[in-house]
Length: 275
Image 1 (cartoon, rainbow, N blue to C red):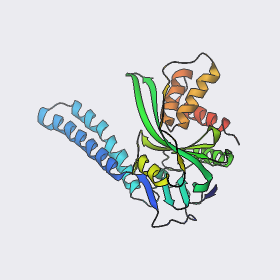
Image 2 (tube, helix red, strand yellow; image 1 turned 30 degrees about the vertical axis):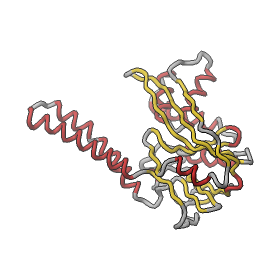
Image 3 (cartoon, rainbow, N blue to C red; image 1 turned 90 degrees about the vertical axis):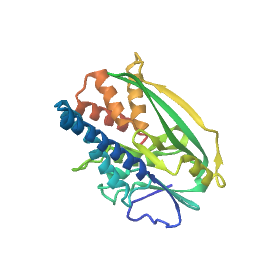
Image 4 (cartoon, rainbow, N blue to C red; image 1 turned 180 degrees about the vertical axis):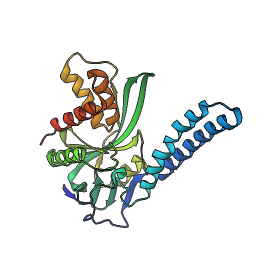
């Protein structure tokens, strides 16, 4: 394993590329515009002022996803690239493209370093003012022959704590799991990587072992009595890419302000680093 900066990473034009789907972001923008139009229809044709509130709230959808749609056409929009025998995985979200390209955020692996791969389906159950809600995410697990992920942990910690004057997206698509497993988020939340994870597995199965699909459910609606277990739940949410949910849970449990909760989650992640 070695780490490269984005600018020094050689990108083979013949390699298979896995990236954020542009189509899903286009659909999100169109859906947002449809709701804005509905709000304006309520104002103009039914004379109800509440339509302005509806249209104003709905306008956030095309604004946010319009920003993300533009990002999906940038050269930084890729998560994984494979050109035998090299496997490149970018630990930085494409929505943070404005960060320094000199940061070492591209992990380079030789397929001989990978012991096995598998698809993972994880269902997370949380609770908010609207009641229980569940969300299922899909990941690609890569088990390395060398179980020491200390360097990856350090790079992930640096990425989480990186300061930036502009807009920062709290999305980190790669996790360092126990026993030398690297977990790459494929689909879930606002992430939709294309092609599917099954295609990535089919592409790699000739050079690495493939394990059976693994499914797990994490229920965060029950609060443990032990403080260490409470913190571990918050940390697990953050590690799985659900940073916003982790911040919400910290606020609910400890009465923190938004800033305090964000700092607490980042401190938990830094404390858990193996480095």
